[in-house]
Length: 477
Image 1 (tube, rainbow, N blue to C red):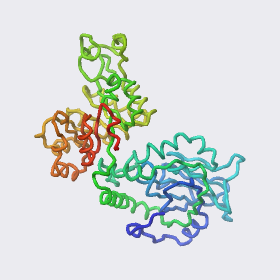
Image 2: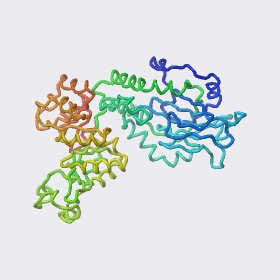
Image 3: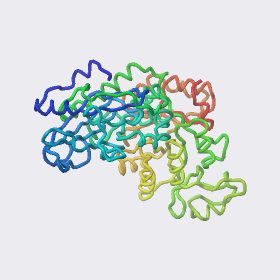
Image 4: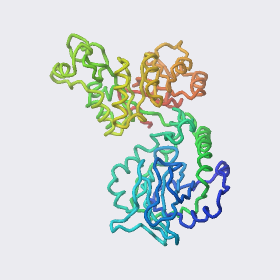
């Protein structure tokens, strides 16, 4: 449990001493992985004696048969292995003699009854005792639940550590305002350093009564300031040259496979890419597909434009030895399975297709791992208007563009100077240029770069992301 000067700002005053003591008496015990790096810091509790909507979880609380009261424990961690902050829940139900008659706990956005295979409430020393998923902290009544998710847990605690950046759930939407490209980068850097291989040995037992218990409202009011304190602390502690730069494969690993093909996507994953950059166009039947040029000439050696043919026609036109055109949906599904994010360079869009594109991304729960980029500010404005949480990036080629003014005009999250044609593009990212961008919360994406000395120079500046046809070059030595 990490204690610091800001932690002391948590309001410890109690509304009811009796409820506080009740919550402490029945505070659960939690079994953690032997290598778990993060333990709970505080608990926001609520004692309820009649049905009510939870203040901190999307559910209606009801007392089960035999219970006269319930205690909701909203358990706060500063860190989940994939993002800055964690809030999980345990519900303990008591009868008139304060015997535990039921228990529930949160599990990846939902909740379950806590019962063992024999139907009993998991108890140790007269206290509800649950298992916490390694790194992610979802609760289970028995270890077997967590073993079944071993593959997901291992990737979450390893290669995916920190990827989600600053976490903002609907509970704190509009209250936590620190989810910016820079802060996401700082969080990723910090958590990647805490990546670990789970043991699935849950011998580390934590008595929740050891953590400060405060009324939920006290904890809720403190959380946004806590997030801001952490992002400022990371900014002071992690200099630009140490910050985790997103490794983006340009049109997939296009140096080794046909650009924008599934083969290039798989190769990018093999070479350690975090994201893939691909180009989005529309077919004649309005299907979003992945293709860079408007013409088929260069890649397929055929006359005509992508937009003049249906998806079926384009598939039939695939030359021998080439891979067929890939739909956006197939790409998103593939990237999700490979744990890679998406940088969508939009080459063609319309009012209806913008929504179709976002619906596909949301269907695969990839919105948080997708950046929508384009040279067309009006298209990015359309995307932001349709989905305020979408991350957008404005591309530009001129060195005379005011990136901050252009990005702010359409509420972009990233600026993307396409300066690869210059001999030393990193020298154009002056201290003044970078400061003006970062001071407004914007991130910086650069591409596509295959010169190792330029890549190292860009990384030392702490840009947020670099694209390359050879993504393995983006892995620091």
